[in-house]
Image (tube, rainbow, N blue to C red; front, side):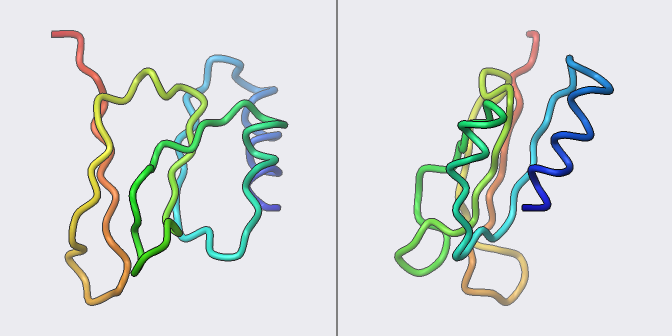
Length: 89
C-alpha cells in the first residue's frame, strides 16, 4: 500500500513528524495502518451514502479538536471531512 510506503519514508527522517492523511479508502483494508504504524482513523460518521469511505489517519489524534462531516463544495456523493486542530489558547 502506498500509504505505508510513504509513512516508512517519513518516520525514520523525523520521529517527531505529525502525519495526517485522508481520502477515499473504498475497498482498501486500512487495519495495518493502525497495527504497523500506530495511526488512528479519526472519522466516525458516514461520508458516502451509508458508508464510511472517506477516512483520515493521524499519528497524533490528540492534536485534533474536532472532526466535522459536511456537504462537499463540489458535485459528489461524498461528504467533506473537516479537521480542526487544537489551539494553545
